[in-house]
Amino acid sequence: MNRILKLKIGVALLFIIMIFYACNDILVKYPNDQLVAETAITNTDGAKAALYGVYDVFQNYQYYGCDMITYGDVRGEDMQNVDRSGSRALGFYTFNNRTPDNVRSTLWSVPYTALNRVNSLIAAFDADRVTDISEADKNNILGQAYTLRALLHFDICRLFGAPYLKDKTQPGAVIADKVITASEKPARSSVEETYTFIVSDLTNAMTLLAGSKDISNGYINYWAAESLLGRIYMYMGEWDKAYSLSADVIENGPYKLLSTENYIAGFAADFNSESIFDVANNSTDNAGRESIGSVASPSGYAELIVTTAFIDLLNENPTDIRLGFLRPDKTGALGYFAKYPGRNGDMMVNNIHVIRLSEVYLNAAEAALRKSAKDQTNADKYLNAIRSRAIPVATQLSATTDNVLVERRKELVGEGHRFYDIMRLGLTVTRTGGRQFLNIDEGVTVGWDNYLCVLPIPRNELNANPNIEQTAGY
Image 1 (cartoon, rainbow, N blue to C red):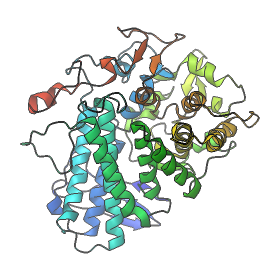
Image 2: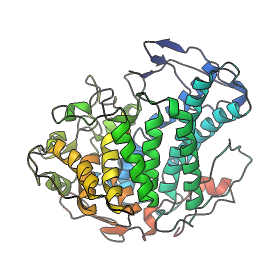
Image 3: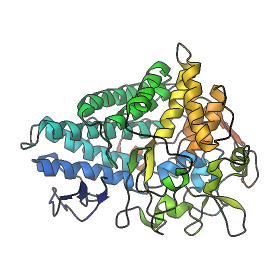
Image 4: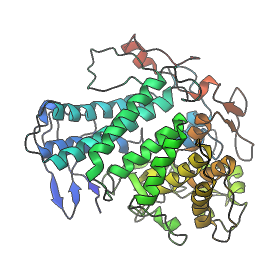
């Protein structure tokens, strides 16, 4: 298995102290706050180290290490903050992003840090500065770079841009197709233009990664790029394309659904048979006490729980294996959800599931129902594969868009999908009480027409760049 372990590299223009290869493990430390200049990337080792520097940003607690996941969950109805204290995800839960001054600005700045890194790497190849690399290694590195660049733009657009199916003419991301210097003042492209750019990058990536179809734990490969493009087409309402790509990953990829017996334990493993793309962490390299494992654990900050409504949803069938994730709080009430249980007793060490095979199954099921020629047979097959794994005694269902979305809630909770599912389809966030505290000024039901569902551009970015158009409503 590939596993990222980290020592130390670089303080300025990529001083590589150590890149060591053994048993397919890569021991490397990339700097957290340095931009590697493309002029410093002149050989294969330098290109690989620069690539690892992009992955490093994904580990940051202000991105996939915590915030990107919690944002997608607590803004829905299945996860919440424990109470009204000033916790890390409270503003997400209460939609308290009312002005450019109180939005979590790192949700904008951290992805752009990664984009400058990835564009430095791409620029080095465009200028033919990497002189000793094989064609296979070049294609593999570039394919990963284009996929990561697409994912970064996708995240920025779904945080700060209107849902594609609501209004794709609204401002989306500032498209970073090259390194953006401090003196440049680029404007935002539309949501449609942003998605067009994302699709182009992923299409290019799949061509480059065609020779990289083996499992590559912790790294992007062909199947990760294809799965992500299938997800993108879901957000765009391009159901035929979403189905074709998702079904190909399921039927032809090397990944397998976890068995019922191994399902719960699979989330405590380094990687498992469903891990298409995980952000890898280990005991010496993780997001620390601010990681999602620490924030969600009853022995950590203990700030995130599933709602009583979600527990009731799972308890529709008391034999649902996913009830095994529930852990009691100090009062004995269930609510903590152990999808990030830690490894070897360390709650801070969890891989983050960015693309998991279960999601691809549910993408295929939904797309099969919505595509131009409805495919009930395969929609049933893919939905019931997930459902039967969780509840082996369950009767087979005839798939509908409603029961697929319910299964997405049950299966993908804690992985940052629910709020985005609500937004991409024009549904509503409906919180029904229980332990929830419902202090959203506009009420407890929020849909995509509520301006608070899209984040404002942070004040420091507005001050630095007069060409940035603010998000509608702010």
